[in-house]
Image 1 (cartoon, rainbow, N blue to C red):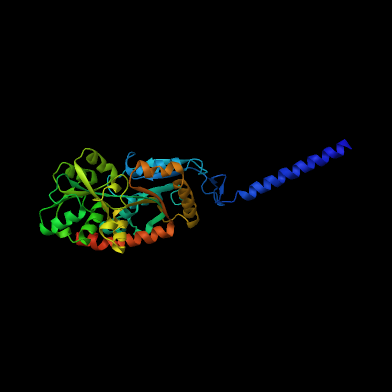
Image 2 (image 1 turned 90 degrees about the horizontal axis):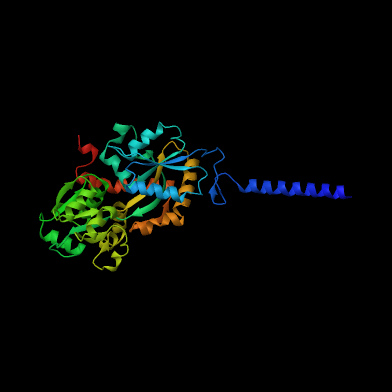
Length: 364
């Protein structure tokens, strides 16, 4: 009798174990989250480390973006997440994409590139990438937009027009040719974005544009009083703001704390109400995310979108909104939305690029 009961208990235990195992196996569906971890796809992707590629120095904006994402993906990714800083002397996103195609796993999605989408959208207008690289704008395979970062408009201390954007515009119109704009690298995204805004408010042809090597240098020039105003980034502007060398008069995005308490400071949308302001903001903001080469399959691209969205939704990643004032996280765009956005950015930017004589077919 005892033996009989024991056997029944053994069989019952085996049945329970098998049921739990089957239930566990059934819950671990490919491409789904199990206990917070995104499961690999049925084809085995990914089965080794995924590398976040930064086309800049480790301490750069994109370097921080990658390391924040690496931290956010801790405990979410089923494979290790690595960061590779790969600055280029010349070129940018498209040059790197072409090079990644030749890497083992590059066409499967194991290398994901930190992307400034506005910069990537305008590169094919300034450089003939089809001739130089054998690629087109359609080769930018966006995975996700995770962040928007504001740009800042700065002016020199004690400017004669006062402390508002409206007073600057009025002064320029009344005094054409007397105000100097420090351009942050002719043909860069910041230069194109600000030129588009200046053209929209009718003063682009009434200022003197003084080329600087880059956005950092242009901010320093204005801080030193050698030019009247410029466009900056939070990291390049803060030293001059803290040193009381410049005044902030405008942000491309909604004005972040603590500047939102100052009624003199406005956003681009406040300066240009309506749809035009919203479209200009899309040119003015840094819209940041991740891209892969065009050969990466839709299933792998969609899996990466799930992964990066989860990483950017963590509390650790969202600290970017407080560590980097004017950084906005959570307005996620997926692969198809990225494609539409990049096309619209290129279309909206082409007229201003041509007006500046910077289109590649104007340089022949």
